[in-house]
Image (tube, rainbow, N blue to C red; front, side, top):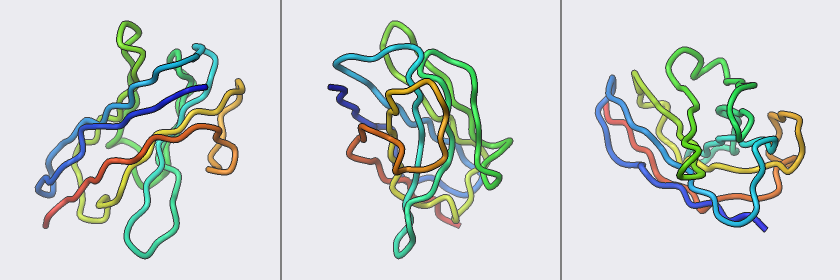
Length: 124
């Protein structure tokens, strides 16, 4: 079992930055894959970014490429999503998820464990 807890969301003006955290407890391995997804009001959940829990093998949606970055903290068993140059269209609930295989996926259906989500609101 893996438990995930996100934090770091909030209200920020356009052009600002936020760093989301995803802390894991339970059994995790560096080879697991993790993903960030988001869901805006009235829209389906969409892929944002993914990578290897232990670092590397990152992939980003075109809409966030160059602005968002995944990083990790080995000691805290946590991964982060650094979000810069935020835009109003980035407003959504952000979720982290873990896939207990060693291949990256862009599909939410392929992820096994999910956090509760954290709200990000970007004002114009």
